[in-house]
Length: 514
Image (cartoon, rainbow, N blue to C red; front, side, top):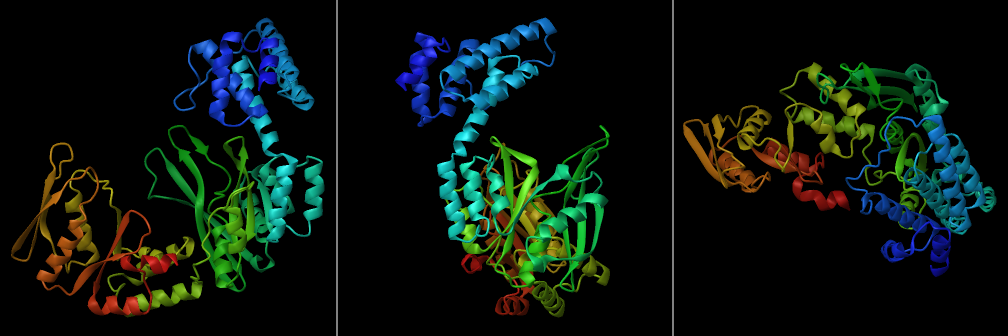
């Protein structure tokens, strides 16, 4: 540190009075690398200009939109060139980096050293991250789990020759992986969508498909007057069976007459292939791998890799250069099992309130979505299950709204009327819920704890159902989060669903996690 500090002061990049600040910044970073030295220098420069250190939270660096006049830019470029030369003299950048950033300076890309330094820091940090010795250790990890095998020697050679520029480059050597760059494809969905799916399917031969079709549909559930969200609904035939998947496409703003977004939803589109793999009882699942530019996600480039659970577990641990998305290996929910479950739901009357058209529409929705368990399947059918966040979104009459929804899923067996509550999160600590069933008015005082539901509400409603001797009861389903999922069942329906494992109930969470 003393040697580098001496060079920095000799080259007048920091003044003697700034040395103490510089040393403190290095101590806080906990590491000694060119990137941390450069970042500490950036902080010194920022404090020199503003009187305080740069905070990444709530601080925005702006150098204005107006371009300097040619003579002024020439002077700036001369100063930045001198600054760049001093960084090289301090051994904080190498010859190649000097040439790269000199070219950018000559192209008038910077107007201040505080604009130049972050770009340098990002590139230097990436180069240090892509250290050949560290890459070799990771390459051996990939080989140990046969994520890389045939191309291992090529990988080692390219690491030694420093050909890997970004962590996602590892996917080019993996046995079952592809890297997709949206810029390699035409702009029209009818020209690129099938091509991207074909490239994705090429990872595993069993994913080969035919009869590719797609629709662009408005997602009315999240659209409003000035935000029109559109989805792709893709269908294809693989191994003699038809599969569907819905994924996001574009956001359109009518007021600006402008589209936003990328060509494909890289986080969702490939899940159609995981449905195929589940039906095949394959040990593999496809995973998304994000590409990065510095700390920012590069949304136009991404990877897809097929992994077994053991391989995925390795890459979800430490010391890795890329982290695949988390996919379910526990889930053995095949298309056949879903079809059989829906028939069982119909048989015991869970769907008797729906028309044939409504049932078919819900089955389409099931085929388009990702189903992690049979609870997801049943949720697609209207007015059967009511799911809500226990951190209440409605702060006007939340308990009255819940009673109305409970009435709806009971198909008026829980026939509450005259429903009201006096919820006031600002002024009250308690809320009085009122509703009438038959001739009896029910009232219950519940606690107001910020916007969280009083869990006593659930037991109270169950007690009212028991007291009224209704045909069924409200039961909680497993969610795995802070949401509550409620269903109304007769005792016979409940016993049947539980015995046949056609739903996962709230007290069965351990079985789902195992």
